[in-house]
Each structure stands twice: as structure tokens, then as C-alpha cells.
Image (cartoon, rainbow, N blue to C red):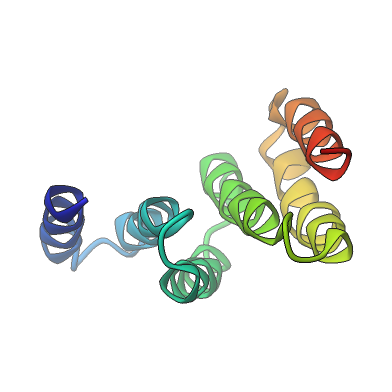
Length: 116
């Protein structure tokens, strides 16, 4: 994990002049901390959410939705209500805007997590 962190932060420094790449770096940071450090993961999710809100292209909606899907996964053990809220109110509408088949994959995956 140490190597992944150093690569991520080096890439973020290189992307300093490119706000979209900065936003994507927070998606990868959240993914990196997903099962390791909840506080750092949430911080990356909220920062990424803020940065992605400024972009209105399909690819940005896709990464933005994946960011909130990771939040739903993180909350699955704590409270199923939060899983549903993070997924259906945050992730799902963004996937629809991205116009990909990921929408149905996410619904099935979220549903299976709720029944585990």
C-alpha cells in the first residue's frame, strides 16, 4: 500500500494544473483506503464529490457514481439504510447520466450486499 500511496500522490502533484485529473485522483484515493482507513476514505469521497460536481460529462458522472458506490460498500456493515441512501440517492442518478450499463450492475450488487 505504501507504493500505491506514493504513486497516487506523485500523480496528483503532476495533475496540479488539471482539475479533472485531480478529481479522479480522489476516486483512486478513496478506493485505496476503502477497506483500510474509513476516515481517510470518507475524506477522499467528500473531496472527490466536491471536485466532480464541477464536471458535466459522461465520464465524470461515471467516476462520481463509483465514488458514491464505494461509500455504499463502506456503510454496508454499519447500517443498511445508509447503503440504500448512498447508492440510490447519490450513485444511481450519476450512473444514469453517464448512460452506461453499470446502472443495472450496481443495483444488483447493492441488492446482494443488503441480503448478506
